[in-house]
Image (cartoon, rainbow, N blue to C red; front, side, top):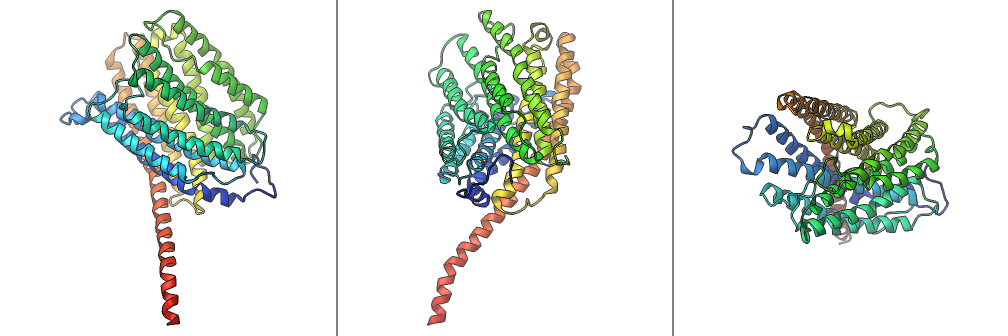
Length: 472
């Protein structure tokens, strides 16, 4: 029995709960897998173009500015958010010990979301980007994504309201906050930057605020909520200290909100000063999370052989390292070295791939066999993808971080960055290879389920006809 869930005579069976999440999971994970492959392919093209400018130079749709922006948004909006929502819905249903409420609503919302991502990507590649980092999708896409997210949130909150155990588990705090956080920051940023744009330096401040809250705070809330559910579940021991988890939650949301204003920004001096202070205080939730992680993982009754438990462990460690890099970047003395270099890009990629993507993929691999009622078509791909993602993240983040420091120490020499850029391209290749394995499992599993469903429907249609023939 799951250590996070208590048995109750009135509870729905786990198999019924899993079955209620089947179609929403396929809709969310399937699209996320596709967009992850396409996004990483575009990111690989952008990385090659940076040190080989003649690569695909004759195609106006694939200029570096188009491809890099499209890749960033595909990985974030196409993969990260829908995949996270798929894991979130299943966790809420399991912790509530109830079937997913309004299961068709997330299915419809998933299709709206994927259509919005498609239209946004076409808009970026055709030169209709908004120009704001991580918010490049045209104005038309904003209501589609917002409505789709709210619809999925309604299903999640309704399921949460049906819970049998009234006491909240720590994952509830993080995931519920994430459901509120995204509509708030996404609508605010779009209203003041795209719909009714403000003027002057306020645009840059809002964009910095949005990027930090999305790439650091929101990803942290979801990733840690998923990790705090699966670490004890897979490790066979309870999560260490609800007090530390609650303390980490409140300090992370309090201090993390004020990060993101770079040192030396052309804004009033107290903006970057307040951001630097909040960054330094970020060490408090990081210590709390590290304590929870170590105490929960040590002595776990499972061996780490490249399965979902390894995914979650590696991702949690990556989050702690990403947080330390965030603190370092905000330090005035260190930021003088890393400003305008690849170091900040390395921190973002570590947060996105090393932490969030790996944690969510680990959760998806644990969920899919349960909701489908059958094993994965290619179970060996789980371990292989783990190594591909781990190696790709180390090559990508490590090369860019070292290159950024070297650039800062040697007057931003581009020649010093070229070897690191080539290594980072290799890292993206391994990430793309791993994403293809995830997509293969998802798509083959979906095809098998559709074929089985089609046979069942066909048998139900033919059966009455055969009965009538026999009677006649």
